[in-house]
Image (cartoon, rainbow, N blue to C red; front, side):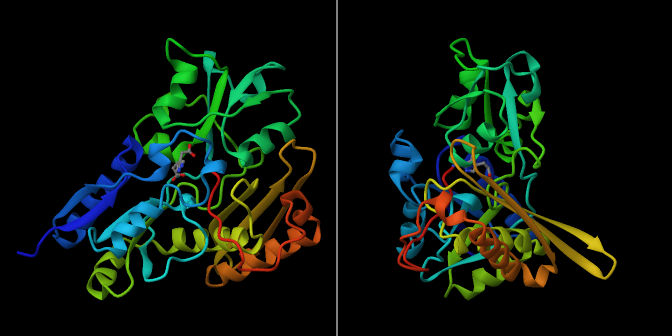
Length: 322
Ligand SMILES: NCc1[nH]cc(CCC(=O)O)c1CC(=O)O
């Protein structure tokens, strides 16, 4: 009998659900026992806006535990991972991705179109704030944070004070709460965050037995989509509070698989809204992401993102704002 694999996880209900799911999949596929080890991250300890806490607040403590060998693997929401790879670590698997779209949870069962001017919508992510403003519906957007239950409580609980919240459908799905969704937002209106709905299963790069074992969980189309979306994010050098969206869809084309990547950079007030798309093959996922980012930069994405004075690529490492 081999010793159980130690899977490090945040303690939030969402993280525990994701980690439990991956642990069960590993045991089902390989017979290896997996134990969950809770790791508290800076993002869990503070309720300050994520933009202020900085990059990787949900991630650093898990990565430190991997490097210190107190855990063997970690499961991250992929969109929370900084775009720069951590040295000595490796994303050994991208399991099949959940529906990456955003979801609206509104009082009275309402959709976005049914919310009247002045309706108050809660969301903390600049990407969502910007796109809500870009709709031109006179919605009042208010920043919120906290775990999924806290956010739902702003609409559903006895102390509800908002008309609606926007959050990732995948998070609700993993918690078994899709029943509260009043509208799954079409990416035409609300393009998701790069890698939203995907998980990253990370381990030490030199742990070759484990790298090999975890490969059974990898889902090639999900990985290709994430690679394209994150290449776009990295090429834009998008800041911590960057309103950048990207969504890659894979389809079977006439000559085999095709990847269709959409990307957007939106100013926080919604007044500037750059959207482009690009098609290619999954093998070129990274190049497609880079090329789409380059096109967005040509259209002035830099001035929206506010880093015209940047000292060049590689000087900043950013993850998601969410
Ligand atoms: N740090 C927030 C976060 N990170 C991942 C998810 C949702 C699940 C996912 O995108 O995989 C969420 C919640 C949200 O955006 O509503």
